[in-house]
Amino acid sequence: MNSIWEYANPRKFMATSAFLLPWVAGLAAICLVVGLVWGFFFTPDDFRQGSTVKIIYIHVPAAIMAVNAWLMMLVTSLIWVIRRHHVSVLAAKAAAPVGMVFTVIALVTGAIWGQPMWGTWWEWDPRLTSFLILFLFYLGYMALWEAIENPDSAADLTSVLCLVGSVFAVISRYALLFWNQGLHQGATLSLDKEQNIANVFWYPLVIALCGFGFLFLALVLYRTQTEIRARRLKALIAQERTG
Amino acid sequence: MIALLKRDLMLAIRAGGGFGLSLAFFLIFTTLVPFGVGPQTGILATIAPGILWLGALLACLLSLDRIFQLDWEDGTLDLIATSPVPLEGLAAMKALAHWLTTGLPLVVAAPALGLLLNLPAAGYLWLIASLLLGTPALSAIGTFGAALTVGIKRGGLLLSLLVLPLYMPTLIFGALCVVRGAAGQEALTPLLLVAGITLGSLAILPFAAAAALRVNLR
Image (cartoon, rainbow over all chains, first blue to last red):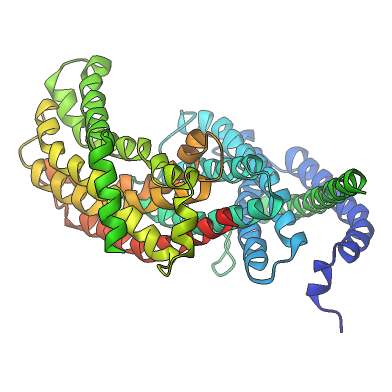
């Protein structure tokens, strides 16, 4: 019986991810092309929002993945703290810039969407603000990785930061709801409630969502491979010097 | 642990700068605000709660890097780590000492600065209460941030980048409490939430800070 912990072995992880990467990347490309082309060119304009509604196919998946990337970092950081698997923490390190870029995409597309719809680029709305805060958390996390020389100390400290940061990110989220009433609409997509989006928009959105998910997975796999290779290179150079 | 607290307080008082500097910073910050936004009393009264909370927060922030830095540089931290006192206790005492030398003076000074900014009379009680209950959280969070960055040369900017997002919930509820109090509205709920954040921070963060210290002392 295969266990997920096998992939804590870098060699095993490299082999499996090298096999998976083209497939995941291919799926991401297919889903993104199909979802976005379908969404942009083959859906009707919304009767109130016109064609601006189509930015949803980038905005919503990017926003969802931005939050999920942090959750993934939280889980992998926990695994590092508990079981000391290097691949795990390197995956967290690899996911941070990807998540940050998704956050920026969500913020920028939101601003572009908000300009014609709400008449403003930016509003101090709880959702918008919490994404800005999320962006700052990503920045802090990455800056801490950069600042510490010893890779193990860096992994430990960033993991602790990720855990504490998650707690405070959740508190901030609810504090913001208390602080200001929102302009942003509530959740449109939900797992447990009836969906309030027409099927014509729903299908391409789901495909675009899968596309962004696969894209995230592909980028994280690729970046984790790079991190592992960089780590090996460092070890080799150190060996050369001493031996 | 009491000895550690006493030592920190003595150092802060005798070395000078510990007590006074953050207070002076708070004063100059509040003095600069009217130059930035203009001397109209109406505007100042509206923004006074936020400015006072921001000033207190920044004054706290600026004194954070000295929490562990000096002890780290001269090796005291290693000695304390090998002593029977747990690092969690050290982190809690450091936070307490930081609060006594920075947070408490700010609480005492805030009403006087509120006068400068024309804070409405109804807000003073809430200002003192929210700062009194909120600044311990700032010290505890700051101690955690200082523990994370203690091994980094010139970590001051990084420290602010890490700590400021963590300060946000405290700032939101603290400032909201004063805003509502000054407007004569119900202000107890944000005050209780501030207290909740403080208690939660005090319960969790010494452990996180100690974990970070252990990594840095390795």
